[in-house]
Image (spheres, helix red, strand yellow):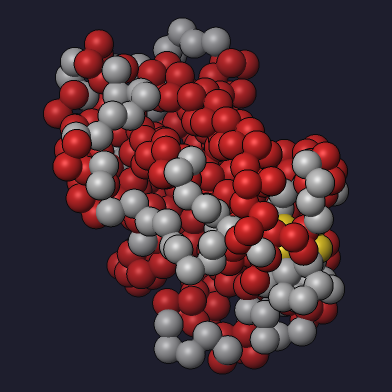
Length: 344
């Protein structure tokens, strides 16, 4: 039982604070029984993400590093990790420290129960498959040669691999450690948890459309673009925003529907687990506010960088904390309604 109260070492906690940014706030509010497992899973996933995103290193070397990372995570290989070249490309940064100390993060995995280790390995294997697929799919993408996903099914699969599976992991871990005896519809609870993760990732995709296009990546499916008379290359021109508008709004609708399922998920969590409720509510409500802002933007105008203000975030966090003891008022946080001064 002692392992359930295990905390990550101070060096790992420092790296977690340095790399997780907004997620660290969510992590801090979680109960101690699941905080270290989720924190370590984040660090392991972030290490893989750093490998995948180091574009100055040739694609094949990044894919080889991801394979090596996966094999070590799954216990299929014991060869020492060799991320030196990747680490040198990070400059002086938290990402460099992640790569230089990857062995320490792997060693920490062994401190958890066999069941928790398996949950962490399972979710990392899915995330890594998504990152590898992403690298291969966009291997020839450049600012002048845009590569797009082909179908809506591919987009849904991608959002599951990089985020929906995290909702699945979170659900199984919290269910096992925090409320194993609660009477829930587990199939619906798990499905809503997966949609929760997909919704957050889809919001990120829709918000980051101009930045991805600048890298030659288009996550809006080609089939959907063709149906509204556009090609992926057309999205480089802000004047095409009106033609894109119906498709973009439909994608926002899908993201909002996923987050609504996430809100249902949050309200399914037993009332006594208020820390987990808060940890779930914050990204959902911030995501919903992001969708609200995106609906009024010309998303193809790369000069505009949409960002939720700190004041808006503070208001969402404070309001949710104050309403936590009052189930009726808590539920009415969705749909999100900001004070007039926050809407400017």
